[in-house]
Structure formats: structure tokens, C-alpha cells
Length: 80
Image (cartoon, rainbow, N blue to C red; front, top):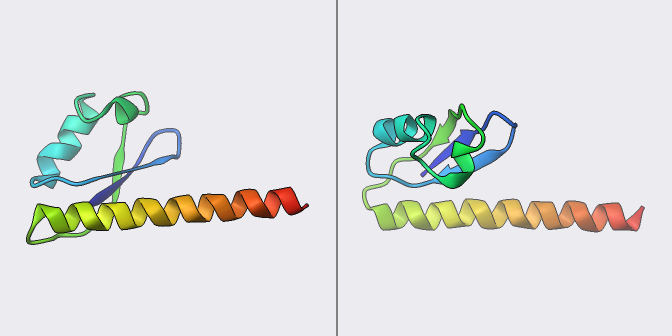
């Protein structure tokens, strides 16, 4: 599981079996439609797992946590 910071300051999460190659793919516009539009990207965090399924699970946990924090911010702004 890895987290990239895109050129616009946003973050992208992904999972791969070869992190080095995947980062190169992202920076050559071959990674994903999102990162292709926000190049260059920079690796800011990664975790290693024995099984790719575990990495997918951790990636989902991270994304779910981000969404919960975004929703909390929206609620806070509507209360003002």
C-alpha cells in the first residue's frame, strides 16, 4: 500500500507488488487517470505486506478514514 502526493497537493493511494516500477509508471502517465492529470507525483508513505490482499485491505481502511474526516469537516462547516 502506498500514498502519493500529486502536484496539486492531493493524495492518491494504491497497492502494487512492485513499488519502484509502479511509481515510475505513475510519473510517466501510465499509473492512473487521476495521477496522469496531476504529475509529477511523489511517494510520501508506504507499508509492506506479505499478501496483496492485505495491502488492498489496508488501502481501503485508509480511504475510509479519509472519507470520514472529510465528512466531519463538512458537518463542522455547516454548523458555523
